[in-house]
View 1 (cartoon, rainbow, N blue to C red):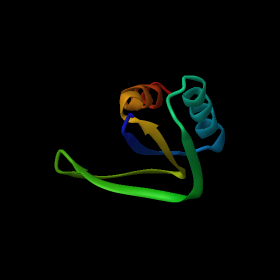
View 2 (view 1 turned 60 degrees about the vertical axis):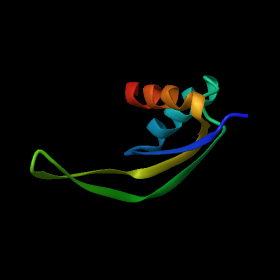
View 3 (view 1 turned 90 degrees about the vertical axis):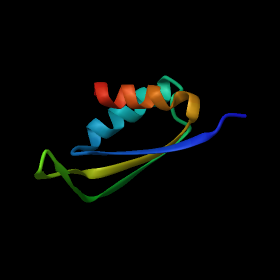
Length: 78
């Protein structure tokens, strides 16, 4: 039985989030997903510079370990 992994990413627009989720489902890359609407801000340090990133929608989902890289690829290509 495969192990389960959770993933999350943010999107600025609901249509964009739904487009990615649809592609993930059609590729059998995810088992479940939830969209949470709220302003999300992430603060991180990169090359000694403080950066801010985020979106209005947080997408949280479940996949199997053997499909994890496919989820990452599809989200990165969107």
